[in-house]
Image (cartoon, rainbow, N blue to C red):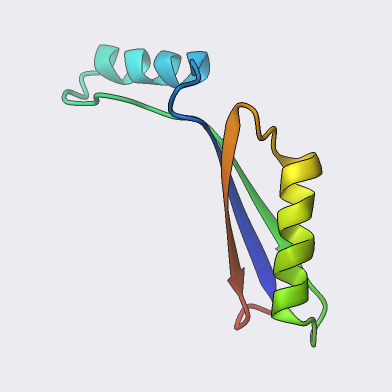
Length: 84
């Protein structure tokens, strides 16, 4: 099983890296870009036979305590039981 975690800045938080990417896209001629948010993508491989609900609880806790900063970041956790 594979866990996929996407961490992004909260909408109300200033994202200077996203703004820099947006400005660079405009300078390169890409029009119509109204916002860019730069985040993190994490994949975690889990042992075969891992209980999906137990994994979800543990990974939610890890995201909240360690992998993301819940004050300024949101995260989305996806479990893919078919991935090996």
